[in-house]
Length: 308
Image (cartoon, rainbow, N blue to C red):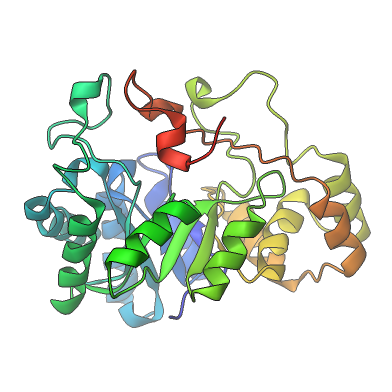
């Protein structure tokens, strides 16, 4: 599966900004754009794609586009319609990659759960059934590749045990504070690619999603020291670290200068000493805790298969 290593993330990119960001990214040399229905900005991204491809300098097949199935469309009859809506919004005939966004299912009219009754049980919406519909979408030519997002090793194993087609990619939170080495090794052993989101710490996410006194990646002394050594920014060191692990990475920005700077991270070569220092930063700290999904009957453990 071809998935270009540095992509543009579009989570939290607002109206009037995301279209310009996509055009700036592709002009700078990006060929990987990461989207999702729940981000609420796919229609504007679609307008940008339409303008770019009509110019004729960049062809559709040169750009890798990922999107994701939201949690309220997991029922078998809802998967293909949700995908087709995303294709309509993005003004595309197909996606390069379509992911199950989270391993949880909501009722069709629920965007974000407030109570237990907002969820569908695994009996009502089995992950395997949702996965079968992604496979059907692939057979129909609506998507080229299929995968998952926010799946633990256990959830990957459970799905793989029931299906004869493994996910091609798992998109998860990855950065020096959350290195997930065991998951990385498992995915490599099973030919599952990894893409890391929130690689810079997602400092611009809503205040309600932030912990008090959470650690900053960009202000970490070790990262700053390595950045000075390479005459680079902390942003570039954090992105380059992903490339040394053979994982794709999707930093978000709407600033054209920063978008270009992020792409140039591929020119930085971290050495053994740098990597050893970064390895020691691991503290299994999540910026995206999944707390927004927690209700009395649905816990953090249900999502990540680990204790908080």
